[in-house]
Amino acid sequence: MGRAYQNRKESMAKTSDMKAKVYSRYGREIYVSAKSGGVDPEGNLALRSLIDRAKKDQVPAHVIDKAIDKAKGGGGEDYSPARYEGYGPGGSMAIIDCLTDNPNRTFGDVRQAFTKTKCKIGTQGSVSHMFDHSAILVFKHDDEDAVLETLMDADVDVTDIENEEGKISVFAPPTDYFKAKQALQDSLGEVDFEVDEIQFIPHAFTSMTGDDVELFEKFIAMLDDLDDVQQVYHNVELG
Image 1 (cartoon, rainbow, N blue to C red):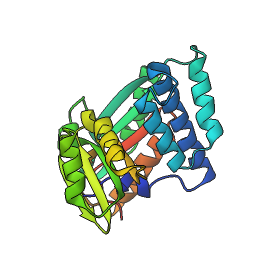
Image 2 (cartoon, rainbow, N blue to C red):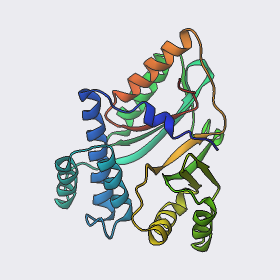
Image 3 (spheres, rainbow, N blue to C red):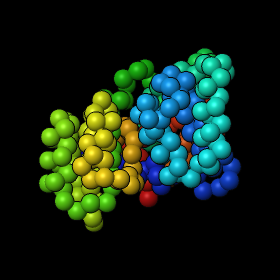
Image 4 (cartoon, rainbow, N blue to C red):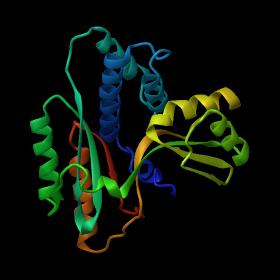
């Protein structure tokens, strides 16, 4: 299945402006999770995982606390998830996950990113069939067989497992995400997950040359500038 999750990691925030975007997106996602599933991380596994990821990405505690406090109030914005997909520059494929309080606005903004880079937004399912929707857990460990046995005992449907340079990468269906994570923590104790999320992983990557590279960078930059966009998945090999 490969280490596709590195694509997003390699393009993460490096400037203060981009960090602010990351904080904002985590804040929105934490708020939605806390509002829908409860503000107690012990009783809301999705929220607990989000908080863990936010801390790992160096999101300040006050950003996390503010989002949870906002959810406690019961009012506030009513965000809903939206997913768009289509073909990007050079025949690449992209899936864009959003949280929006105005679907019409968000669709228009995302579509503009496609049209301004000579690309086309597609209908639901137009490219997602070329990706695997997978939970990914990566952590330091050297006994792949023991990890696999732990997961099998917990009835986790492991789709792939890799062992490289002392790191185990576990791939499982999104529905088994919490079960897999809990089984590993129960068996191995406190696990420091380097990657702990659900992603779309492309079946195959594509490389780009010439003008397509510049268009693709513009495409991603336009999407990154949109507050409603939470994640962008694509099949372009970064390098």
